[in-house]
Image 1: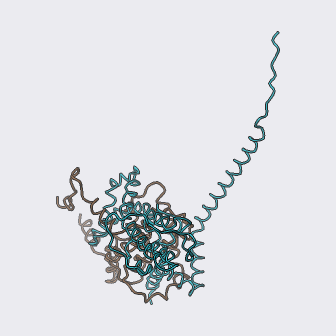
Image 2: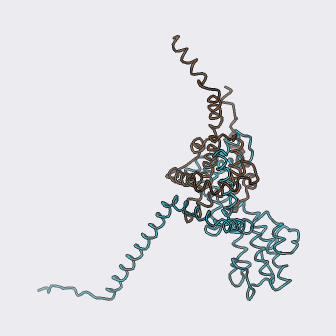
Image 3: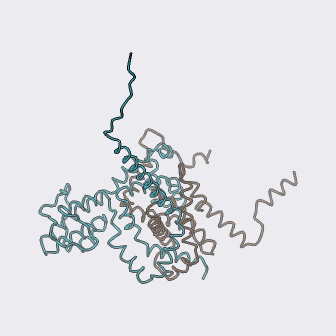
Length: 268
Length: 184
């Protein structure tokens, strides 16, 4: 077996095992990630267009066109990319928002049924975030969603959250939790999309291969030691600054209200 | 003059065995999708170049280390084309790097670094004797960008639509004619 074959396998396996990429990112970064990724596509816009033209890959050529939206390379230099990337992210994430609306609709239907309806609805909302995968949404909610009409209201009449048990890992908050989740879904633009269908197989694989997983993460930790150290240093500096600020404040507080006598020479 | 001609003539064709010539031809074909070429084509500003190098280095460590190399042999028979395995694999790798770096990687460099890593992986496969075409690299990059965009909540098709729109001019500037310069 040539060594190269091993790499294919390696790359393929990383893809299978670490398909949690979306879920991982989703949990920590929030709505800004889409914008940042589009900014990344702009940075690589020239390459995307070039390789697309070279190989006849139209998708790459189209993605490469994103750079021109920001005014080309000049746009990257002047910072014009920022607003453009944000705008593109917003427009590209609309499908997810519609799906979230649909998810809310299904959630309301699910609530009308069993006592655990809201729990299913929560799952439905999470899946609704996937944007395009409405089939999975239907299976999660157990309800047939009605065809989506234009201008479907984001409000979910009759949906209340208290005193209903939640499945583990789903945080709907307290009152109005469904709305909260839906808002997050809209803001995040599908950030949680990979959680439902991709994270589980990844963790299954990790459970079956604990030693391999451990070895892999150990290597990564070694490889990324620099980043971790940078973060630790930042934390340390921040804590030092805060300690100094507290010390200054204490000193300042201790002399507040103290009147210092001022000697004045008698005029004679 | 005669000497100059002979040098030029000699340089025109590579010397060595047929296999060596074939290797040189492959290298020339893969030049446009080489890691160096891709990195050179990125529009990096400020210290983004140094940051990108760090990310790529971390990715290479994972890909080429003996332990991780062994680790993934089991997945050899997995489904999909080389392009899919390259792209989705590197996307997963970027996710892993992201996670292990405690989300400290600059997110705007995930796609550019991933593109370079796809080319690195393809380059390695070529050196190992596998036939990886430029189309495979392009397909790998497509799979990578698709996976990352979906992870970020962006619809790749929608973005392509917007990009296609962006590629067209609005009339204020004449569209560049491809090949015009070469023809003249």
